[in-house]
Length: 125
Image (cartoon, rainbow, N blue to C red):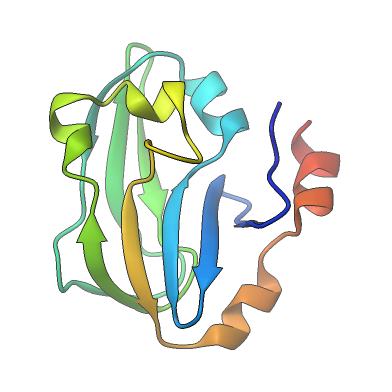
């Protein structure tokens, strides 16, 4: 399994790539493998304000549907519209083309509560 060093991880299997006060969010390699073939992604709404751990999106696979939780407080600034017609990108490239949304981070100190790649790998690899 792949655990990029540039990311932080939530226990609920979301990753966030932080760049300044913005973050790009998706689900981990571990999560997409557990879910199986992704067939639908319900994206969050642009401009939606969220708190850390709020359910904000849904990923459906051939096995189940799973909520996606916001890793930090913030406002949705972009969603990956490509997933509307190609949800399989989450399986094919979960850390690249399969990202789900971008968020403007309100409280950057919350990222300290997220797992490092080493901690996430230790728990879930």
